Image 1 (cartoon, one colour):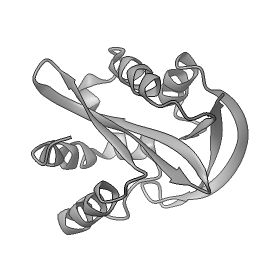
Image 2: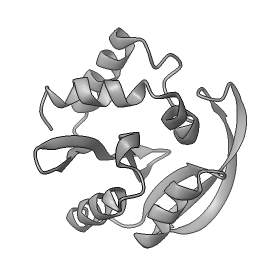
Image 3: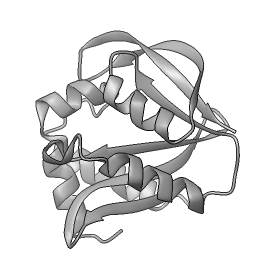
Image 4: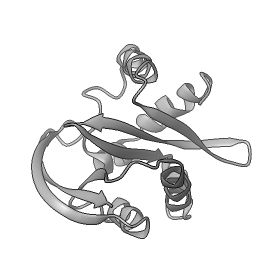
Length: 149
């Protein structure tokens, strides 16, 4: 991941529909200072693995792994103009091949059927449910916890 990728990630974060689907996002996706501080923190964490997703030379998103609740989790973000093209599935599949640790967890809002489908295609199965406050929606919502053994 290169520093120049962050500007693209920030632009993707500004999309209201993408934020709604991701649900568990930054409190203020327009706040560049908060965005930069967040990325500085996660890039400085040795337990975080981040890869930029590209198509040709174009940055289309990122995929990452981190520790939450003492478990390894994965997350990804694809720019909305690249949705529905199989890019997320391919990128996550490749990323998971590089991570040897299992189990790995992921989370998705229950109504984010596209993300749930990507995770299922990559071998994740629903392992539980939770409720959490979704900044992008301004309310508590239900989410699935998925697991890859």
